Image (cartoon, rainbow, N blue to C red; front, side, top):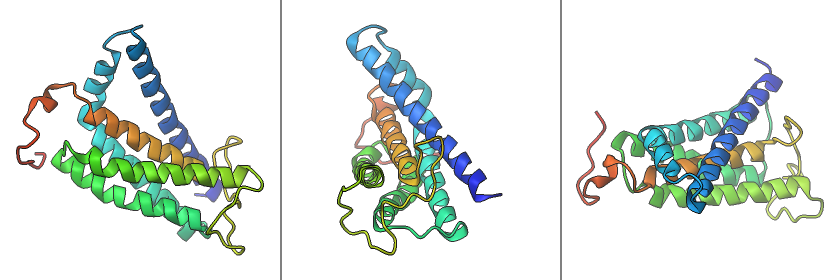
Length: 195
């Protein structure tokens, strides 16, 4: 498979993740202003049972995609790319274990990591798109403003990472919601592995 084909496939996955985030936030806003009360509960009850596994899949796909870009395509990661990897890679393990254990507290420790990753991605996108934005730790050999991949006119590698982080944050929010029978259990009880 060519680098262009893999890049397009990963960009499409990133756009699907962004669409999911947008739809979820739209329904939450509609519920909040009272146009369709209870729609957020419907989303939570539908997505919550698989939310952590979906978040794990997003993190795993992002990790494998970044490894493909550096190890197969030969794109040398810049400093900001490394920082985004530092945020994404541990989420694979954290979310995988949390999904297996159905950990109700996962948002407390995975959420901040994903939020930091999202902020770094936003900064990286600004460095790519806005001339003169200071790149900080980036080197002249591998500048952070270098765009290796661009699909659909705006989807670059940091954009894919941002959409991944936002999807993880949204899925954590859906999972941590207070609706559904899964949340009626005592939060201080010992966690049991999923069977």
